[in-house]
Length: 84
Image 1: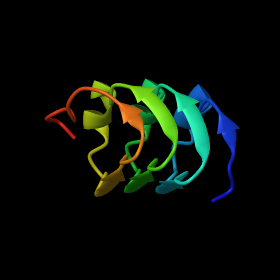
Image 2 (image 1 turned 120 degrees about the horizontal axis):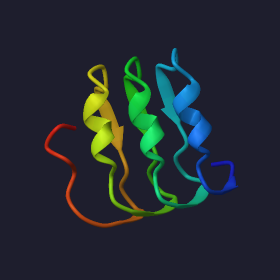
Image 3 (image 1 turned 180 degrees about the horizontal axis):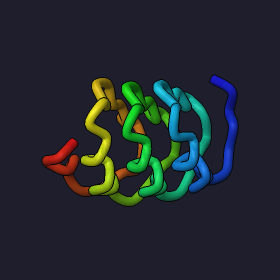
């Protein structure tokens, strides 16, 4: 619970060896960058309890290692892509 605000940077998609991305309980807003879908080694992605909006990018289906994905308590719309 750091209360970091602003938008999630698209540069997160450049962290090729990232395994865990835990950014829950902050004040991030705006869409989830589709570039995060480039992280094929990512196993845990926690974005819950922020102010994110928009849809969950379909590119998230590219993350074959993703085992734990949490986005509750945001302003997201639509369904979780079948590929996630």
